[in-house]
Image (cartoon, rainbow, N blue to C red; front, top):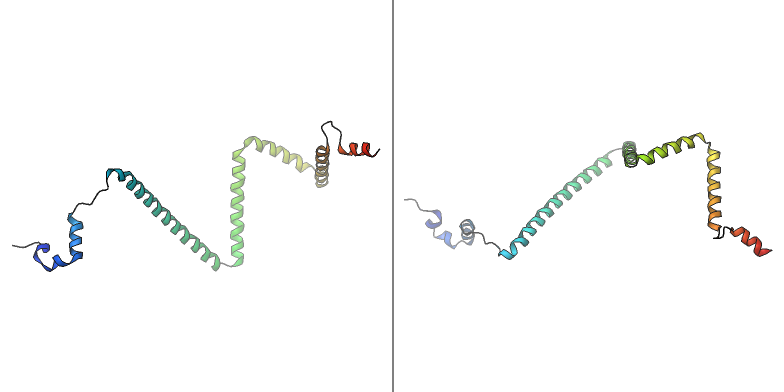
Length: 157
């Protein structure tokens, strides 16, 4: 007749690690009281989310370090070429986003660009100056429609 190893050795009974191993094996796990169960579930979910975030952060850190090492090994010319390519891609994406977001504004802007392309640079510059002057006049205008210059002339006279 073969006996169980827990019963056969009397020295095992004095070993606390052996006892805790078998106690964990056979004794039921203590459950929290009903009041604490939702709290424990929430904490378990938060712990799981935290572990996922830590893993994601770890992966991103690895990726960033790898990218930095790769860039350090590249020459200056290769780095500049890569930056130019990234900038071109970004501009394409920005252009696509702008065109898809407002089709009515796109129609207006295309007609404006056609008119602007017909004008010469000197006409464009003179137009800007006129706009600035008219803005100043509007700012100096009073409620009665009399400009500040006219009021100064009346005051001097």
